[in-house]
Length: 355
Ligand code: UT7
Image 1 (cartoon, rainbow, N blue to C red):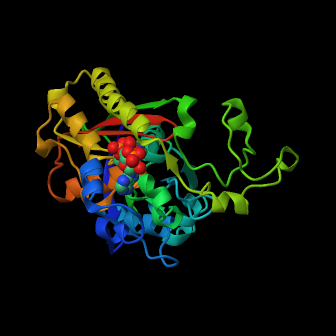
Image 2 (cartoon, helix red, strand yellow):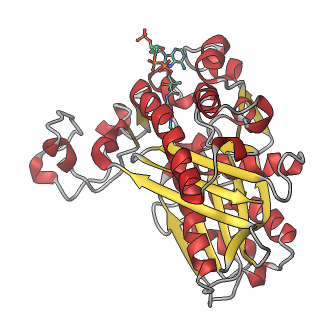
Image 3 (cartoon, protein in one colour):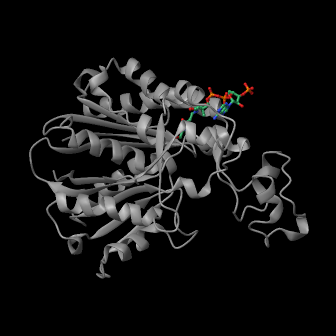
């Protein structure tokens, strides 16, 4: 059976390092609080007006393409995962195509909006296209420029201190090598708690979901104005245009779903916890990773964590971490690599790859 593999991987993080102490100068927070609750020491912010989600994605993609031993013209499908796109529409897939100078219009470009699990969803899509023989070089990018859309006042501190900018990319290609490649991907969703971790304005909802959920939220417009307003001054002044999260609620589900979806992937492939050589979890919180590690009985050197340096880079976090692990020689041919993510939606997923 034809399988797909990660044929090339690359990542890019901007130069600008923002420490916890830097943030404590603009909002009421502290290095101690951030380290204790999240493990984060610093994060990177892209250069405003010079870098964007799609340009950072392109930098990561160039490395992945080179390492895959192909030319950019050989890419036959683009998948771009992000929650911080350059534009509301069109998506970053076509902007990346342009940034890379790919003029071939035979290819497709797909944007996916699955936040923290975006890379796993993208990998699963790429895997299906390659397995069926439809495409040979699928470029999958996860990138975020969170820093352009965060609330830097104390009001937003529970969310803002967590996020960082960066990009990761892989080229998914067919492999005929026995046993090698993506063994399985598992995808899940539960829309019940969509608003627990969300960025809801600007949007076309017009208060619909709040009525359904019997939530009283004043967006500063009347029923008569529904359908006309995507964003207004009231929303800006009341910080309704930023991401919001019920942190503890998300945390409790994350520590349950990460191990669950990993065990599900292992069961499908007939493998066991002890077979995992390297786990690369979505970098949401060092405490979540530590919990999952313990649950799976993995040693410290079997889990790749880099949230300390980059914060949570959402769709970019797994490919950045996987790329670092690969570059450090911690992921070698024949290793069983486990990826897992949980986040907004809620959506979650896992992947098992024989490298
Ligand atoms: O990647 C997608 C998935 N996301 C996650 O998995 C995130 C899961 N959640 C978390 O990682 C944690 O819930 C957080 C790190 C976001 C927050 O940690 P927490 O221990 O759950 O804190 P909390 O939100 O319950 O807030 C505790 C206190 C509050 O003060 P009071 O009400 O107890 O006086 C907050 O106002 O900490 C306060 N606080 C802060 N203080 C200093 C919240 N953010 C900050 C901050 N600096 N940045």
